[in-house]
Image (cartoon, rainbow, N blue to C red):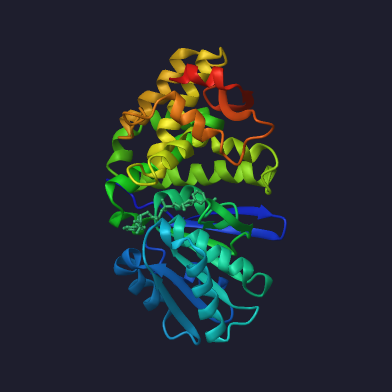
Length: 359
Ligand SMILES: NC(=O)c1ccc[n+]([C@@H]2O[C@H](COP(=O)([O-])OP(=O)(O)OC[C@H]3O[C@@H](n4cnc5c(N)ncnc54)[C@H](O)[C@@H]3O)[C@@H](O)[C@H]2O)c1
């Protein structure tokens, strides 16, 4: 018999207070767990796909609360733009929202980043409640207070640090998530184990079957442990001046692949999965990591249905050229997050000649 997991709350302290991350199934329809966090006018920002499945239960839960409005945007990364950000601000103005207003971000990382940035900028900052509906957003994007929109010249170029007042992660919303988006989120889950939590990594190795089947208890444990891991890193380094960069493990290779494939054929999590395999292989070529450990990471990624090889036609040269443009490069050296043990990340300036060894 499988027991329905209880509701968990993880408190994340930050410079301006603390943020409860409330985790559990069917939370949207249980406002007793989160309605007390709402103040003033409430604007729900969401997108069409999410709205189809999950907006009605949320609106029912909000009941006939005064001055509540909804803005439904088109789905997809292209919505994280200046015009959509501006449309959120326009709606707040037309509602007469004051400094006590609350934005609810109901959706994946796109809506979380966009609505979070609108909340950060409206009247120099109003409250945002993140209600993430993708696995990636529940384990990563909604946690830690980074918000952003894209500029035509680059992803996430405009943004702010703005911690949410609360994060409400309803695991039941993941039931409608496509298999591909679900697996893409698992890449970030694996990352937490690889960079800082060997016990979690081993637990994931032993749970590939129930994770693939979205077993509720296994999934809740995986999300809880991921949030705890992200909390550990962001509490130490809220403004990304040091250790938070470890979260970019697999991302420098991954971003290069996403950009080369024009954000089309690869999901972010898939690109990160390939990037982690390349970074681990490079760590092993540089003598930092035992080859068996790099292989274990690759095996876990594959077992969870994620790709381990760059698509045909995207070899070392193309990827390195693209990596040169990465905004995290310093002094023309590529600073890569590598592993010196499974469960332990290090940052190392790496020459282009060395990087070719990953391929
Ligand atoms: N702020 C941060 O710290 C941070 C961290 C990681 C990623 N991000 C950002 O997050 C974004 C990616 O997030 P994402 O992968 O959640 O993308 P997303 O928000 O585009 O969602 C992915 C897809 O799933 C659909 N979807 C969302 N919830 C659903 C549900 N419950 N049922 C069915 N379909 C659903 C969406 O319509 C979309 O097609 C990127 O813009 C990235 O830059 C931010």
